[in-house]
Picture 1 (tube, rainbow, N blue to C red):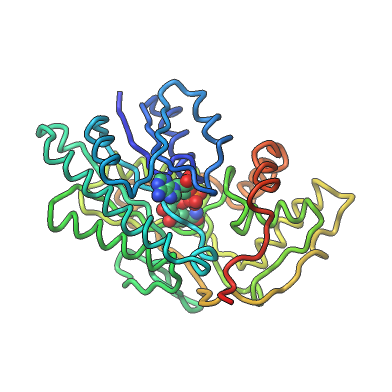
Picture 2 (cartoon, protein in one colour):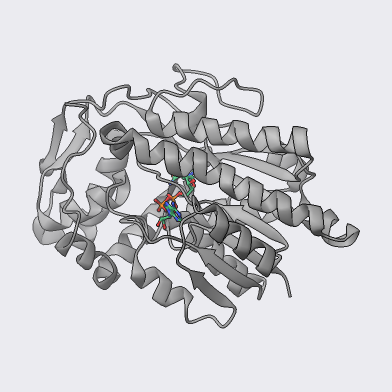
Amino acid sequence: MARYIVTGGAGFIGSAVCFQLLVEEDAEVIAVDKMTYAANPATLDLLGKHQGFRHVRADIRDAAAMDELVSREQPDAIFHLAAESHVDRSIDGAGEFVMTNVVGTFVMLQAARRLYDQLDAEAADRFRFLHISTDEVFGSLGEADHFSEETGYNPSSPYSASKAGSDHLVRAWYRTYGLPTIVSNCSNNYGPRQFPEKLIPLMILKALAGEALPVYGTGQNVRDWLHVDDHARALRLMVDKSEPGEVYCLGGDCERTNLEIVEAICNILDRKRPKDAPHKRLIEFVQDRPGHDFRYAVDAGKITRELGWTRRNGFEAGLEATVDWYLANEVWWRPIQDGQYRGQRLGTAV
Ligand SMILES: NC(=O)c1ccc[n+]([C@@H]2O[C@H](COP(=O)([O-])OP(=O)(O)OC[C@H]3O[C@@H](n4cnc5c(N)ncnc54)[C@H](O)[C@@H]3O)[C@@H](O)[C@H]2O)c1
């Protein structure tokens, strides 16, 4: 039975990875997660129903704890997702992003290196350290063009700069120490269990509550959307099939302006909650995000050609299923609203 460590396994994408490893591979999964504001105990409860699942509450910046854990568990691979992940919060408090995303990645790389150096030839051949990063490290595109594995780094926000820093460390640990790393740079994800500070769940919950739907600037910024399950499947393929040192760009081939996303959510809710229609009346244009990247779009040709990955979820059906999930799972999101986050504006840099 394969054994994996998933850092950030209680978060949005990390939990999707854990579910797939548990259900589709019958693997043993150890989620290392500090349970920051972004992690939901309800997600851990769902994961805990699977026999092969364990949660270790620990901080990836804690070198002694990570060394001990990684050498004790001897995983076949480490999926490294733990991070501070919200651009607006990085504008308000960059320090946590540098500490978790850069220093935390350094700590995980060192722990992985110590394990790797002790493995026998067969286990060393199998071992991979997969670093999950974002297309935001490449900065902003104009009207045309796409990010690819050849694109230079040009991050705009403290979040993307800290992720860029972590990518560079991972690449250096491959070149300098021969650690079998893989880097994935993926576009915006959507799906169930995403913390409601991010665009799609924020808009769903605000629209349900009859609150204003704040669209940054003119709403014309473009993102490329990928369903979280398609992302998780791509990550598993990388661990299974990729050569060490590889980098893959991932996207959904699905460009939408932020305004189009908000309008699509409104249209879905008009059908599901007709008495409050039209939800579009709630849209309000607000001050733009400082340093707001105009457009992201990813050419995912390499992973399709080399590893045979294609996305399975179309955007319209995937978005509707996501809205349905939030409608059916108030027990998951209500405690967040009753506790630390009510959808207030973050990241204005004032
Ligand atoms: N969400 C996206 O659209 C997207 C796209 C591309 C790449 N990524 C990357 O994927 C990864 C996961 O993103 P997400 O959206 O699931 O984020 P998330 O914020 O939902 O989850 C992050 C998880 O990491 C945990 N964590 C944070 N700091 C920690 C620490 N010091 N020690 C241990 N655990 C800690 C949190 O508790 C949380 O469970 C991130 O590295 C992010 O940069 C995200």
